Image (cartoon, rainbow, N blue to C red; front, side, top):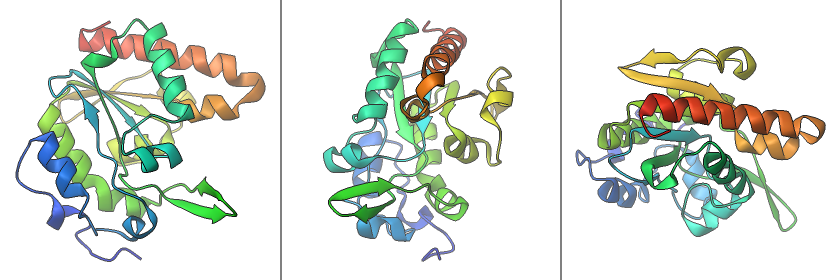
Length: 208
């Protein structure tokens, strides 16, 4: 159960400074996920970015270090960004959920997918980020990110070739880099698909 019907909304300041928002997010109690996470992990990158990449939630390394996309999936993402001919300094990266959801198995912390209620509870933070950065192009990495960005469930394979327009922004849907890590025989194919989608998104944003 979500603690508050308003989710994160009461904790989000009026400021549209990413630094102020990131600091305020550390006090968020809009859903129960904060209780088992080390910290909230806010978005980072150029506040003048025309391209925003959106993932699901911070992973184990992100939760420990306090930065998005610094773990294994992040290394895949940044490799694909480079192969797509994009400059990471021109990109803003974030997640639709700011706290790491997991279960403990011995000394390991195993990722658990956020629920629809948890995504919705955290959505005021994501909305505030978009208002602060004002990126014209958003790339949703994976089904959970797509749910958070679009407000509905989509199938990645069917949706990735047809960008959508949401609130004046162009939204691309593609695979999360963690899918490449899990894919075995299909890994190379998924990697090429992600690179292609990032290249198209970058060109639409005017940075490719």
